[in-house]
Image 1 (cartoon, helix red, strand yellow):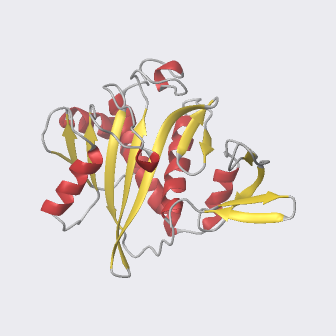
Image 2 (cartoon, helix red, strand yellow):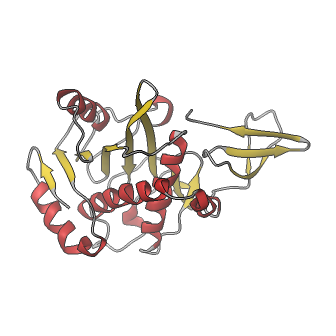
Length: 256
């Protein structure tokens, strides 16, 4: 993988580690910017795309720390030093994606499988969280960028707790794997490979959704504390959560 690190701090170290550990997977070519601190990698990526909109190959912005990281529905995402905070933009190359949820679930599956190789049992909380023992380890925020009716590019923000301090209800990899594995550099490379793997999933059949279903965090979900829960029956072909309550059936779609 060719990483163009701008600025270059630690980018060369990550590139060398990536070549050593992951050369057998034959990854593609990325342009990378590594920042010691930023407001948000999403903002930094948006500015990069505005300054240079010709997306020939995938781009990613990594930050050691974000001051104002954003999670689902605009919630503040705590992102201190020690985690992997990444935003990526990827050319579409003809994918006819109808729901951003598919991108988010494909990436969640790819990352879950990489974590499982290190003995970390992961559950996927629809639509965008990875849980270990009910505690949040990672979050994914997918976006589709259109130009008119044409899908122009896919974007995804990712936060992964590695060796950073975490809030209540969360967990970091340092509590789950050996110190040699709980490295931001290793998991930055893993995330880029997971992004590539998610594109491969989207380019094929939707059979991979069964692997997501096998990892769903629960068999029930509630829409309101005053209502009885819905039973989760599975996922639709567009990444929606299919639900049943008695004779009622519905589908939840988070990202249109």
